[in-house]
Length: 225
Image 1 (spheres, one colour):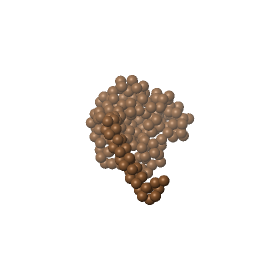
Image 2 (cartoon, rainbow, N blue to C red):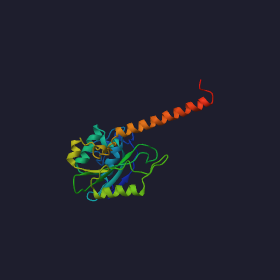
Image 3 (cartoon, rainbow, N blue to C red):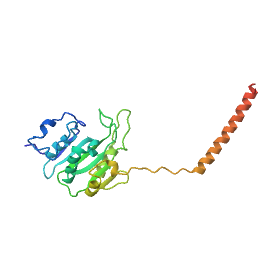
Image 4 (cartoon, rainbow, N blue to C red):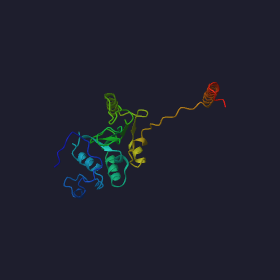
C-alpha cells in the first residue's frame, strides 16, 4: 500500500514527457483510476499520485503546476473534471512570472483537501504583486501574508480573489483559468479632449516662439540667405 500523509507538498517538473505512461494503465495502486494523463505531459500523473497519498479525513496538499493544467482539454480535462466533481480541489493560486529557477513562465499552486466544508473553490490572482528582480522575481513577506490571509478568509476580494461555486465552474466547462473568475481589468482614465487641445495650442505657441528666436540667431550669424 501507499504511505498516507496529512500534508503533501511538491514542485514537480513541468509537463514531463517521460513519466511512466506505459505502466500507468496497470498501476497496482490504482492511482490513475480517474484517467491516464497524456504520454507527453506528466503534470496530472504527479497530482494523482499525491492525492492517493492523502489521509482520508485530514489529507491536504499543495502542488506547483504550469497554467496549462488549469485549462487543457482531452484526457487532462476529464481528470480535472473528476477531481472537481469529487470536491477535492480547494484553491487555485496564480503566481508571478520568473519566480522559479529554470523557467520564466508564471505558475500556479493547486490546493487539494480530502475533507471540505463546502463545494466552493477559491481563486487567487497573486501574479501582479511581487518584488521585481533583474533575473528572478520574489514574493515579499507581505505578498505571502496576503495570499495566506485571503486563503484563510475564503472571501472575494476585488481584483484579487473570487470564491467560485461548483455551478460556476461547471458553467465554464471545468476550465480553471484564473481570469475567468478574477477580473483584474482596470478601466483607463477618460481623456479630457479640451485639456489636450489647450495643451497642444500651448506647445504650438512655444514652438513658434522658438522658431522665431532661431530665425533671429541665424540672421545675426549671416545665414539669413
